[in-house]
Image (cartoon, rainbow, N blue to C red; front, side, top):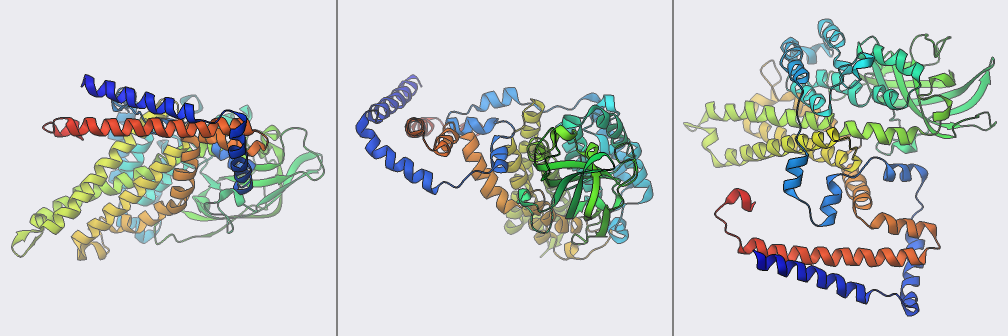
Length: 539
């Protein structure tokens, strides 16, 4: 109503004016602000270069609207609409459909590998090159198509879905496209798109899991036979597709004790290591060792180790060349964070959708005590949870994919997607196992849930364990990046001599809090006075 709008505006403005009037601006205020500033400087830990790169990577999207205190649902619905092109829809209806018909999840689990025909079909039909631009031979698909393809395959086989998703999200293709030299792009991208090369990416090692920046893998700049290069020692594990990879993306810490670099700098660097000789490694890399295959809870996708001991690697193998040395962490933050919000949420949605279809049907034909178990309230409660999770994940997927289609790269929203979609997917599978009982715990060709039940803990763990993703990125990085004033206050503290800036940002934060409090109280009153007859509009 007009009355509520006027009241809301008056309360918000009054709160803002009162706060401005109370904000200390004269010299006496410094007697209070200065001790607070000095205390803040003492307790705030030093922000490393890698932490700063993470904080400053990507863009802020809808998350900033939440902290503004005035998000618009109407604007969201108008601005973000995910769509598939005719070519993308055709690929889903045809090539993906054919691939799904070729998959036998039970046989794949027994063989611990995809069949040779499936491998060939994936490579020939450019499943590994979905995100590579068309002029390099790829499909040039958008994020929504990428997500829908992975989701559909995951409903048939988790192992196959992981095989397809890794080159499109964790592979070096995206890094090459954005940062590679013209020669690297021209050579590698067509080979990756056509499945001639199979990529993997080595980031995780024994000392570094979710804390990827703490890697101990090192490269030392050197010159051998007149060629500038690096001696790399690495020990990577849990690397998906490593056992079958023909090109390895490797992250390591580069040092230059003899000051041989003329471009770039020391620091985390990303190189592309071929398993056979090519123009970037004319003598090959005989020290590159693809080690034993891991057994990730019996899941059949390829996963293993990558190791080397003082292996000489030409500088031409660094993605982007010598001038990109030391910029690896920034590159990873900008590119690989996006895929985290696409592929793993697609696995979560596939799990929930399969539960809705399979378990929902099962509950209606399975009878106990002479009634379908779907008529029992305990079962209905679990079915409701599965249905709500599926609806929520699907809505989140559409929203996030549309944000990416708008050319935004929000790392915080990507982490939130990974966290909540995989958690909800796991919950849906767990509730489903309770419903189908013995049919779920006995492995066999008819057990459609066992593979997902085993696989969901893997999705929870990879690309940043959910417990750390929640604490460090969703809350930590999310609060710092999305709040309109907090990052500026941190910067004022970091400078160490910006009392004026600190004072201004404290005032801004308090004013922002009071204005949002005013909005919350007035809108709460408005909602209470509205008619409840239109349930959809009310919620």
